[in-house]
Image (cartoon, rainbow, N blue to C red):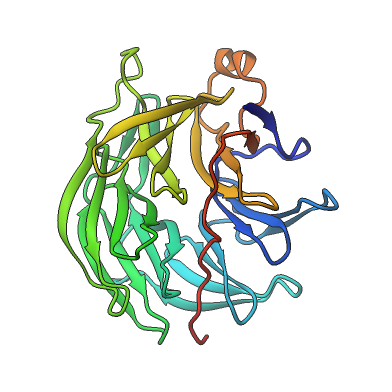
Length: 310
């Protein structure tokens, strides 16, 4: 197994939302704090960057089957035409006037977009957020937006089992990885249970894993979770909560991960430089890079795309 920097010429403030597009052998991802989206062509090595907004943070990006991308920009879900950079606003978080924003999002096996919201980051050191300002929404393929969970603090990673019967979801604060029964036909979720409860993040506790952030799932139905503040990605058996593997990443602020590469057997890991101290940056000079882990011996599923009409 090896861990290396995948894209040497890009350093992200807060990298997030990696998505492998197998049709183009490219990786798309966002920089939340710098308001950018990126597409890296793994064949040519070319990186294309789009700056979306000077005021609103960018939460996530997913491709659409009919072309373009859905992007979370502040309080809005927009459709982005990559070539023209034209943005069409589709939905704003209801109700208007609340100081929250969209965060992580991912498409389910039916092609719906699941996307969560969160309140403000109050401070990086110590890391504090507005409590219970977030919700989890589902953008259906008919264009309708439905609230599925409410009064969340930091809505984050999502994944679905290979039999399409279970949805996994992370609420980073208070540090819980959850599972729900999932109906692929209707998009309904029920029967919430806890896969792992990390508890409150304590950076001074050497036993603290960090804050569970973004995640992905492999073909064995084990989940891979990036732990912000922990500097690692951990593989878990979600049925038992057992920790199967820990992959150390040379950056303290690991944010999310996805499987990619020609055979979907490489793990791409996004990281963050924002909020880091000078001492931390000296210790981890590649903070903010996208990393690639090879030789894991497992594969991921092709990523789901949005299948709705726009």
